[in-house]
Structures are given as structure tokens and as C-alpha cells.
Length: 427
Image (cartoon, rainbow, N blue to C red; front, side):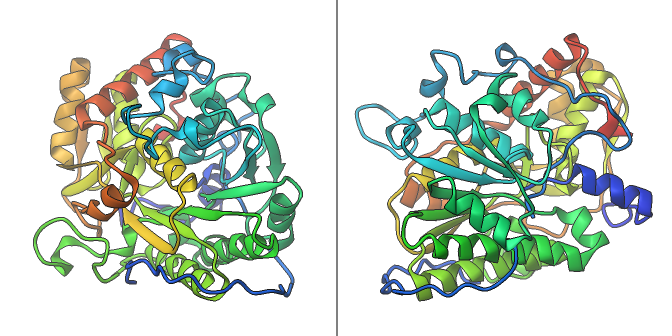
């Protein structure tokens, strides 16, 4: 089964997928001449924050991984240190605790999704009480990643990113100073229902920028998830890693929507002076990644721990990045003082899926012979150049692939020992 044929379009599967959906998103040369802000703001009508709740048709609670099971809980004394790679001798954007405080409020849309949950964890570790905006009503990923008590430490706003007024209220009523926008449909859902996908991904992003515009300068910037899906396959470009300024050639509806969002951000900077930073990861992996086309490597790791057979639906090369690294990048950007409408590639580790399978088997020997993949590649780059990101935001060494795989396997093992490792994504 290839990635082209792996999505069922039956009403039941569509409903199931919607229940499980979450966040994860032309030229990217930053515009740096700051225009004058508009002195008055006009308002018009109407704004979806997507994330999953529990498995379709099940009332069973989602698994919770206790804080001791992950690298560091937000309650650990070392939590803040674990969120800063850079030396204390030189102030760095990666020392997020230097830039966050209880007096500043960050809105995270799609907060109950995979990346959103890790961003929430980082904000809590840095001393904030985030405003979590999501369509779902069960923050199970947040509990899994950040601890059982975390939902009580958030301001939770249930809303639809496609509902303009709901987004405006979330920004306006909670003293929001920064926005990390992650609410979106992923590739499978956008393929099933392109119209709704455009409403969620494109209109939803415009709603975020409109809400920020209505805040009349109180919100300092928007950070959002774009995607390497804005680019086409490696054959569409010269050999080597794809640069930030390579021309977009999206091969999916999802990629088209992400191009539109990058251009929306550019226009809001040029016309209204709203600074923004978009990030283009490709294959995000790690605890909490359970939906979307590029979730397959993580699902293979889960299958390994469970002793189950699993076949990744695609092959070839890809650029894998550990989810915590993505969250760190978003938080560093949100705390930065950079102007313009900037877009950055996020590079982790370039690898072939066959090698990823071998690395999982090496780290988890009982999985040998259980994992496989198809040969057909996905229509995205197999390597990303993040030179501009490293230049603007400082050195940020990614988690080595072997380490990220090991951390993910260990987290799944901790869940399994607690009797809480959910296997429904593998069905």
C-alpha cells in the first residue's frame, strides 16, 4: 500500500480521521523594511483549531505518560535547563526562560496536537501559563508529554480556527502577546476534503492574522507551522539540500495551502507591520506523533515496542526532525525581536526510510523482521538546508536521529509498562 492509496474516503474513516486530526505548514527572502502600522482597523465577519480527542468510537481515556517517563517534566528542577541548549555565557534565543514570564501570555492554536503539546510543555517550563486554543476537548497529548496536572495550569479555550470571532476573542480576551499558530488539517484530511482543508488551513491562518491586527499592536508576533510540503520532490530541484528560497512546487493540496499561508504572512507584514516567522519541518517524529502521512516512522517505533508488524507507507529519503526540536524553534522565534515575514526550513537528519527501519531494529532488537516499507517516495524534498535559520536564531544542533529514536522508544516503553500504550493508530 502506497501513500497515494492509504487514505480511505469512506464516511466512517473520514469521521474517524477528523476526530483524530491535529496541527502540524514563494520566495522566503525576509522583508525587513518595516511599514507604518495602520491607524485604524476595520472588522468583518467570521473564523477552527483542530486536534484530536480520543480514538473514534471509544470512550476509553487516552494514555498518560507520567512526567518521569520523558526526558524532563515541567515540574523537574532541571526542566528549564533542559530547554536551553546554548551556553549561559552568551544570551541566546534558545534560553527560552530568559524571554518568558507569567506576565506574558502566549496563545497556542492546535495546542492539543503533537507539536502544540510540546510547545505548551516548553512554555510551562519557562514559567508561562499558556492560552491553549483547540477544537478538541481532551488534552491527552498534553498530559502525556507534560504531566497529568498540566491542563489545570493552562487557560483552555475550545474553539474552531475557521471561526473568526472565536479566534478574535481568544486573542482579545486573554491579554495575548504572542501567537504560536499550529491548528491545521494534515495531508490525509486535505486529500479527502480539499474545500474544508482550505477553510481550516488557509482561512484559519488569515483569521489568526486578522485577530492580531485587531489587537492593535499588543501582539508582538505570529509564529506558525508551514511545511516542507511547499516544495516538490528532489527531481524538481538541483542536487543537494533544498534552500529556503527555492521556488515552491507543492504536489499536494496541503502544500498549496502552506504556500498561501506564507504569502498571507508576507502581506500582513507589508500592509500592517505584523512580524511573523514560519517554519518548514518535513517528517516530524517523537512521542505524540500519531496522525498524518509523515507520522509513519513514529508509528513504526510504537509497533516495535508492541512487537507488532508495521509497514511504512512510503520510502526513499526524507528529512526527520525530533518534535522537541521543532517546539524549541517555535519558542525561540516567538521570543525573538526579529522583524519581517520570515520563513525558515527546519533540518533534522536526512535519512532513507530503509535506514530508519534498521536504526529502529538496532535500538529495539526484538523488532527485527517486523518492520518494512514500500519503495515509492513521497513528493517532498529528501534534505533541507536550514542555514538561514541557524544564522538568524543562533546555533541549534538538532537531536541526532539515533538519540531521537531511542527517546521515542523509551517513552513508548514507559507507556507500555504502565498499561497505557495505545495501539489503535496501528490498526
